[in-house]
Image (cartoon, rainbow, N blue to C red):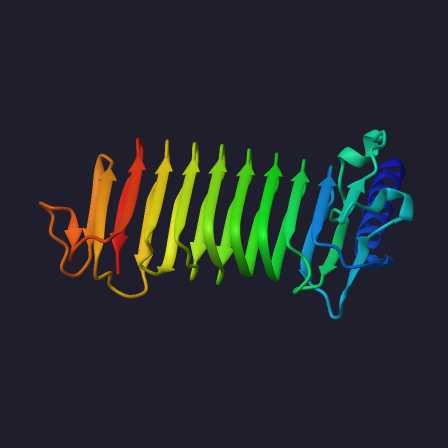
Length: 276
């Protein structure tokens, strides 16, 4: 009986220790302030990253998390490029058991001076918001991608295993490719949007009529919900089950009005729903 009591007490102490360990507040470490540069390159292994507008005309870099040190990142400035890299290091077996959230890099960029952003992330989530950029290129193996309040001329987002969400953004030319992840676009505009996913759903909500939208999924549903009824749209849909409920849509011609704008939705093993 005494042994059982001791075991229960030991488990309780260990559990309480883990809870206290997890509840310790995250620290914020300032990496520095840097001169604004037009081209930003970021390469990360497991860290998350948040990129937003700078409060001034400088680049600000911070880390947020537990047990941080400045050797976790290298920062270089050369040839008009600001380069941030997560230091490659050997991981202990304990790091595979995560009791705490993954550290996050906070990168603030001057809105008027940054032109291109290239992100290569192996296993981390990232958010980009409140910026105006000429070009955004993203490569991620296993992480969530979130863009909000963005103004971009050209954006290419490639993810192997992670969801992509875009909200309240104006992206002239957008290309999204995903092997295993859902894509959600809300209240966003542009001239040409191409969205492809192998194993995931595609959802566009509060959408506006645009010159060219192409969506394709190998094994997922496609849903497009217009904020206002399109007035001149040509629709191409391929699926076993298609539901289109738009005012003035002619099923025989696949058009609304003169069909000046184009919408293509193709899925092999899913349902297509297009409505207002």
